[in-house]
Length: 229
Image (cartoon, rainbow, N blue to C red; front, top):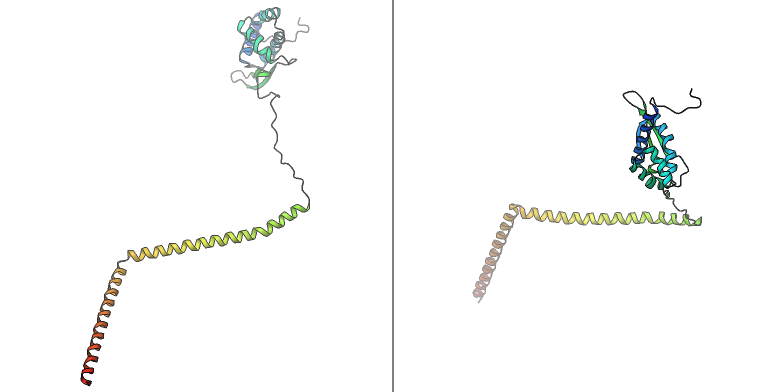
């Protein structure tokens, strides 16, 4: 009869069950996290946590006791080396079980079992980030009113000055652009060249006519003087 025997047999004989739990414990020590069914994870937790407690006391006797369960030298070296140093200050609860969705084949409940000290997402020893807070300025009540008044008086003047400067710059640029365009147009048009040539010819003809008139007037004045004599 099973009086007081509440552990899960996992549908296996005792030799098969012990060998399976030993292999799972070695895999957990080596990889720090394994994925298995929820029932096996709960059975493994009961199996491996007393062995981790034994590893805190690194003596030949404790190594022989743990080796009688695990039967792998590499797992013993890892357990009494790195793992025991990590869990030195922890009084128990070395593993954590995280439930997952059911398996597709037989719909078994799956879970992760991991060593607590090797999961950085759940560690509480992280340095807390300092929240950036704005320091409150202690000022006299009358000071803000004066500053606001100064700002209100100065801002329109600065805006007006800026607008005037912008208008001056725009006017200067437009005048320069228009003059440059006019000069380009005048130089490019052939009609202006013809007009300038004609005007120059007309001016030369007018000068010649004036010279001839002045000569005729001088001759007439000389004839009149000779007749008067």
